[in-house]
Length: 401
Ligand code: ACO
Image (cartoon, protein in one colour):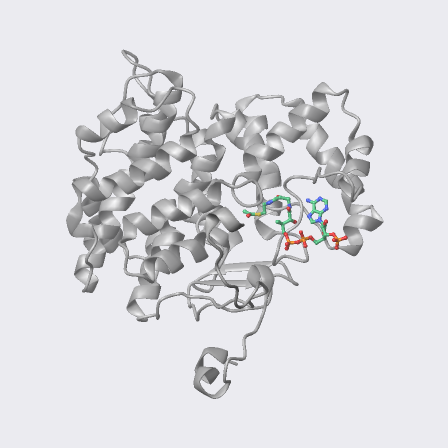
C-alpha cells in the first residue's frame, strides 16, 4: 500500500521504521531484486548474462534509458561522452590543495561537487535533453576525477586518456599509464574490470542510491546528488566494506591466519568486530554478485599468475561461516564486497581506491535512479520522526542555569 496517500486522513499517524527496513521509498522500474532467492536483474536482464556478455557502457545505457542500445545508439552515446571528457584545468588547483594522503573517496566526492562550478548548466534540468547533457558530462568527467585521485595519491602526473579506447580501457589508461612509457591494455585486466563494474552498476534503493534520490528530490543538480552518493558509499557498512575486507583479511594473515579466532570475535556481541563482506540488508541467500566475483577471482588471479594468500583465508572464512549456526540462523552470506578487493589487488589497484572503483561502477545506477526520480516528478523526500524529547520548557537566563 502507498501510505503517503493516507496523509490527510491519518491525523498525525506516523509509521516508525528505523533503517527503513520495511519501507519502500519509491516505485522503480530499474533493478529487480529477490533477496530470498538471490536474484538480481537490471531492467529484466539477468546479472549473470550481462556480466558475461555486455560491455559496461551498454549496461550503463540499459540502466539509464531502459533498453539495450543498438550499435548506432551505443556509438552515438559513446561519441557524446567522449566530447565531454575534458575536465577544466582549474580543477587541478583544487586537487593540488589536498594532501597526498587524502582518502581518494573524499577527493572524488569533493571534485564531483566542484565540477558544478565549471558546468553550471548541469543544474537546471527541465527537459530530457537537459538531463541527457548533464548525464553524458558526468559519465565523461567522473572517471577522469577518479583517475586523478589515484595519481595524486601516487604522486604521478595526470594522463589525458585516449578517446580511441573503449570506456573501460580508457579508465585503465588514465589510471595506469606511466609517464614516458606506452600503455597496452591487458585484455585479462580489461575484461575483469568490465565485469566488476557491471556487477556494481545498480542495486535498487541501497544507502547511496537513496541518498542520490533524496538529494536530487530537492532539485539539487545531478552532480551534487552524485557527490552525496559518493559520500554515502564511503562508509564501511556500505561500499567501504571492500577496503575493510582486505584490511581484515590482511590482519588475520598477520595474526597467524587463525580464522576460527575471528569467527568467534564476529559472534561475540561484546566485541565490535564484524565479519566484513558478510551479511546484507536484502539478500537472505547468496548474493548472486558474490558468486560471480568468487569465480572471477580464481580466473583472474590464475590468468595473471598472481598468488594471493588472502584468497585462501577468504575461502576458509566463507567455508566456516556457511557451516556455522550463528551465520546460518541469521542468513549471513558473503556479499559483493567479500571477493572484489582480491581482484582489485590483483589488478594493481591500491586498497584505498577500492571504494572509488565501486563508485565508478555504481555511477550509471545512481544516474538512472536520479533520472527516473526526476521524470516521475517525485515529491521532495522528507521523512517524519517520532519525537521523544521534552515538548515544552521555559528558558532560564544563562546566569540562572
Ligand atoms: N558479522 C557478524 N554478525 C553480523 C554481520 C557480520 N558481518 N552482519 C550482521 N550480523 C548480525 C548482527 O549482529 C545481527 O545479529 P542479532 O540478530 O543477534 O542482533 C544480525 O546479524 C542482523 O544484522 P543487522 O546489522 O541487523 O542487519 P542490517 O540489515 O541492519 O545490516 C549489513 C546489514 C550492514 C550489511 C551488515 O550485515 C554488516 O554490517 N555487514 C558487514 C559490512 C558489509 O559487508 N557491508 C557491505 C554490504 S554490501 C554493500 O553495501 C555493497
